[in-house]
Image (cartoon, rainbow, N blue to C red; front, side, top):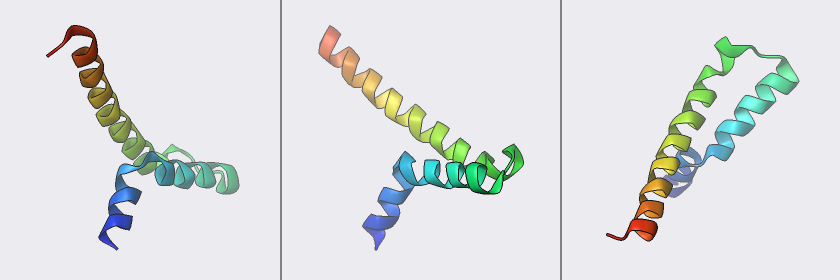
Amino acid sequence: MWLQYLVQTISPTPHFVAFSQAVLFRGADITLVWQPLLAMLAIGEVYFAVALTRFRKVIFGS
């Protein structure tokens, strides 16, 4: 149960599905879909920071 919640929170896929279904099927505007967009942005920033840190370690060493 807690693992399912964790994966649904840190994975961008459920947020993207909620966003795309709202826009494609219901014609939602930005006032209705700002939360999934914000979640995807935050997750993307965290993943990018982790990848950049790992990349710098590999290229420039410790």
